[in-house]
Amino acid sequence: MIKESKIKNLADLRAEIFRLKALAEEQEDYLSDQYRLFNEKVAAPARFVKSLISWVPGTTAVRELFAKGKKDEDWLNKALRIGLPIILNRFFLRRAGFIKRALVTLLSQQAAGALNKDLVSNVINKVTDFIRPSKGRRKVQKDVDYGIPPDSETS
Image 1 (tube, rainbow, N blue to C red):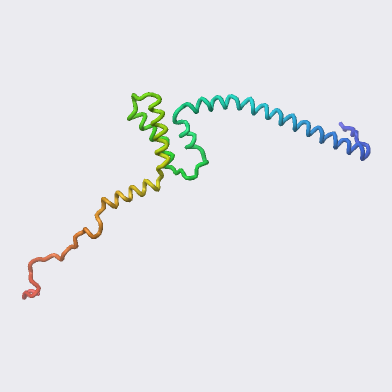
Image 2 (tube, helix red, strand yellow):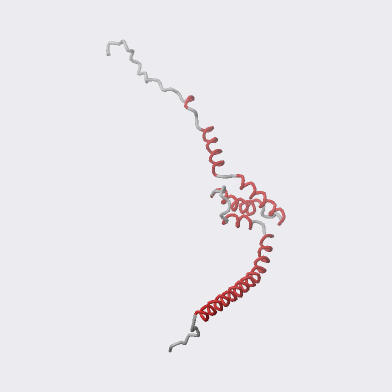
């Protein structure tokens, strides 16, 4: 099966190139328009879900835990942002209302944001330095005296 070409001379070749470029541009415009319409259709439910999730307390902590934007947070900070509200709500605020739990969650996340592993290690070092006795307090061990005088006849 041999396909016969419409191109017979240089003018036909240039006309075919121009036609193909126009066709490619038309298809690109159509596809970009369809992509934009698809994004708008998908974005509406996503915006609705985000607005619903924004009302639930604690979801910002989960979102920030997996976000890679903050460079100053370490593993302890992330763990405290998640664990502290859970511990407070589960053990200390069992019969508290929704508003009180939401406020405690918000405040505990802010407090956890101020802590990092360097600050905690500095506090632990200060406590251990306070507990450990300093070298000046230790008794100097004296030589053991067995009761034999140095000028005795036995020496």
